[in-house]
Length: 322
Length: 284
Image (cartoon, rainbow over all chains, first blue to last red; front, side, top):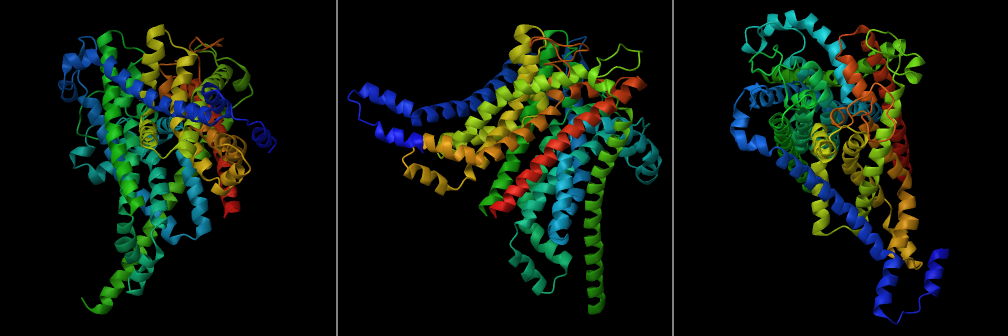
């Protein structure tokens, strides 16, 4: 208040145009605009430098291996021979497994929380589940090593008895494996799927439910045949966001995947993921080609998550427009 | 199939599927209870006062603590906030108050993009920008990595809370003769202050648990790290190193560190969420 009256009383128009520009800057509007604009531009700059650094520092590796980098599976730092296929395979397989476990559980829980549970219980449970998303990934890794892996060793014979005939569950099982990594990732992405899917299901107009129920549908039929299709894009968006997160997840995976750069069909076999190899080998990497190859892995991971995130945004945005 | 059988089948499907969704919720919520319960019981058991006051002991010697890692995490978070908060907050002010142009669309888009970048890739970025030219790991590099991770969320939460301030407040300020910047500085930002600070606390809690970007930027250190130019220990990195080590004693220490880290992160999260939800109810 005091400030505004002083401004109002000291505004004799300055004669010189140069001074008036100066005055305008001092009055703050242009200054505030420039400062905040600079901060916004800074965000673009940082992201630009990030992309450039990834690109230029992987130059040596890209020049030497070309696209073969993505399709060969020799990872031999001694011979300076690098192929990323085992890591891409491990990343994709663990994320796919995480989705196989996470989608039914996550969407199921979201349906329950949005459609069935009384609002108070729903809010309380959602609060709890969203806290799961705040748990640091290294803690998931810690629990993965010391709790999940021993449990998996216990239940392994049961899994083998039921699914052992498939190539996915064969060979020796040491605990640390693609399977363990997939389960840890599933636990990590479920909160994301639940919290976003619940929001989109809650946003479905109640006319839709009421119309279905009035036509004689059961509660489940109105939910599954009417509400869920209505919210489909949003739910798909939540799944893509979860996928992007699991592709880039580092610590928890590194701690339980087994760190073995081989491509095996069995989920019981140890594997390796892109993020895990960067985390493990970056500080030990000697030689420019080695570093360059690891940075190119970072570039691959970056490109992968950008595409998946873009798809997610597209789906969620389309829902908002509808 | 007779009509009544058909109806029975539909009702059975109804009950089975609804029960299954309940079961899904139970599993998801049960996981949390299990994780927290296990960590609290196991972590609290091996926690001692030494953990907060002692340096790590050499391999083979039991005892010791992680005082240096606790201070290290705090130092890293300080640099991270110096990098992330000003850029994020001012960027948020731009989007909320001066936005609307094509440029702000681009800024929002790129912010989302940056938010989706995996933390390990941010680590590579900080490595190439600071560690590579300097030829050594440093606190600064780790802080920068965490700071960059803070930017997108800081932008988003600042913009959201500034936008939640009613237009009538701005109009009132301007009607009293305030310029746009005065209105923003003296009316809008104070009104959004609590929300923005809560957002920053949540943001800090998130990066406090980040491990991947620190592995090859701030590296680790078994001693105190004076100044800002040396490798430094951080709690999450210590948890990782100790958990994958072959020593029983180190595993216990990893549990203690996990307990301390998770307690801090969850306390901030619970406090922030309670504050925000209270605010929302008042607004309604």
